[in-house]
Amino acid sequence: MATATQAGADGWTSRTAFILAAIGAAVGLGNVWRFPTLAGENGGGAFVVFYIGCVILIGLPLVLSEILIGRHGRSDAMHSVEKVASDSGVSRGWGLFGGTGILAAFLIMTFYSVVAGWVIYYIGVMGWDFVAAFFSGAPFAGALAAENPDQISSRMTDLFANWPLLLVLHAMFMVATIWIVARGVQSGIEKAATYLMPAFFVLLILITIYGAFTGNFAEAVAFMFNPDFSKLTASAMNQALGQALFSMSLASAALITYGAYVSRETKLAPTAVMIAAADTGVAIIAGLMIFPIVFAAGLDAAAGPTLVFQSLPIAFHTMPGGALVGFLFFILIFFAALTSSISLLEGVVSWCINKFGMARATAAWGVGGLMFVIGIGCALSLNVWSEFRLLPFIPNFADNNLMDTIDGFTGQVLLPVTALLTSIFVGWRADRQLVMAETGLSGGMFTLWRFLVAWLCPIAVGLILVFGLFPALLA
Ligand code: PFF
Image 1 (tube, rainbow, N blue to C red):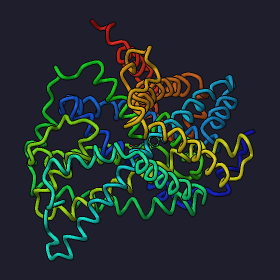
Image 2: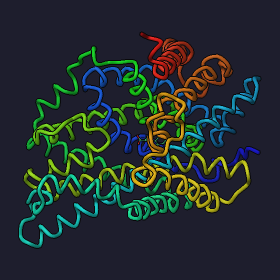
Image 3: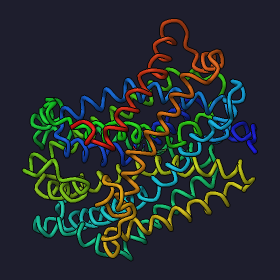
Image 4: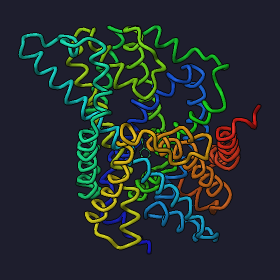
């Protein structure tokens, strides 16, 4: 049963708190790790332009849609959608897409925590290195000065081979997330966001300035903003859309759930714009932080998921002050990852609280524990289970290990499907007056927003979903 009071008892203390928490949910590994990886793999400019189009035309309207569902429903993702549906006089079966969102959050967290574990490892490596450099009287030395590039690069392969260590790191990150969520909205989630997000922004700006001065900024700008549309394949478009949804924490319960804790007075439309703008701004800045450093060291932008972890430490190796900056860089990613993982867990936990009447702490430890267990499979797919295939009969995933399968399935299937259903529901089925009142929009702005949600989102998301999954249809 949905409890309408869930949000009332422990909501955000202010609009700023909500904005910080929502930006914290949005800004994460998706911005600092996944976006540069995908932009690098898909040739830069055209991908970035298409991505920004997805953000403005699809992501932003959906951010507003999700927050309004949460604020009206005042419950977890599934119960909130059901409430909006019944207040609109349509089937509560629409709650289904709240459910697929919760499932997406659950699945994303299983691999998110493993990758965040890599971040903890690099904080340790770089931190130790910086302390050693500092005490040997060379605080501004390059990172890992005593190693050659091959040795630095093999740190990641060594880590991947060391499954017990991977599991310990995965457990550490999961416990940190659970601990914060178990404390509740105000004293856990809000507090974490109010400390971590400002620290994140300070570090981001500092490292970007550092990269601009010491790296190859011009080449990075050209790479990111000179589009070559021949590189924009159907699969690249599918990935860009999936990334826009992932990065803005859409279609995965988080924003509906956080919306439920927002007060009636908060104006939702400007808030949605702030969230979308901050998230996209950080992704672009992350690119401008990472690519100058990568290019200056002559490394490959298309290195894939190891770009940030394997390539950057090599780049920091030769840069002045690299030991310190490398250390700060991984702390930055850690902060971002933590405020996002909190929202992933919260989306599932709030559903368990409402559905099963569980105590918050029990739900947090129970759900987090289950995520940890499935995440073990993700960690092992880097080593002992690397040959295991979960979906060998689906061409897109036939070659993927468990971790890539979960990542690919959520990004390419679950998120777009949930986004599609969200837009059809808000655009066509939800009561117009209800929706208008929640958005606070009127006149032309409302018409524009509703057009994007009702027409553009379903058509664009539907097409990208189908052609991304079945590229042969385009041939
Ligand atoms: N938006 C987060 C990131 O970019 O890292 C990931 C994420 C968080 C996805 C929360 C979905 C979600 F519900």
